[in-house]
Length: 252
Image (cartoon, rainbow, N blue to C red; front, side, top):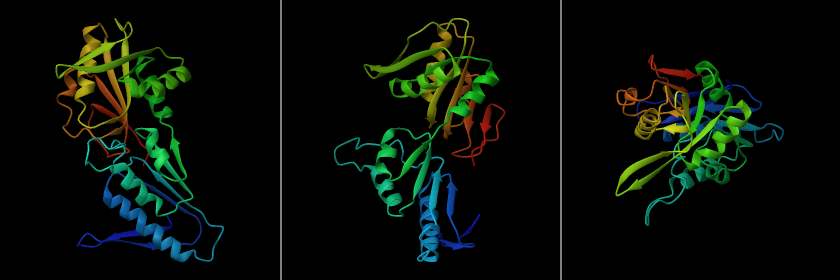
């Protein structure tokens, strides 16, 4: 590490560059405090490299805050990802890498940004389970899950959720009877949708249902999920989880 971060008692964040040369920041990036840490590190580095035109600065964000707020949801509402992206762009990094962003909007809004694929983590879960059927939870996840299924030579079953009179109705487009299933998605906040999807898969005969998400928040714990999901696989991009019900792959 070529920098040092300090947080004062009042919450102020400050940085110090310890050695010259290229800058490579790797950070969860899932809080506004993380964004300010990035900013003070970059400001200090810029000051140290005013005459060094060959040095480059790269940033890797493992779980970008606000990535699901990728549009203005209601009239008069803020476009949060746009605000966050503008802040990142002011730092002028030569390269910004994002692990499994929620949508391509993040890559479009952040300058010099690239996607870090989550394939190898899904592959680990897939091989650990023993070649399950992959399940895409909605239309938005279908394309990326289809690409993973092709690389793994795995079966893929699409699903979709619609609301009928305010009640979620899940449809499964494939045969899962007697099969183990692995739901693949980018992020779990509470996870209720995954619980309902697993419930529907099992009602159609799935023997076991597992869940993979890259960004594992699980803000309401696991008690409800355990009713229908047999095990969870995820990375530690958002936080570290110490629970036998969860297998985490380390990214940071």
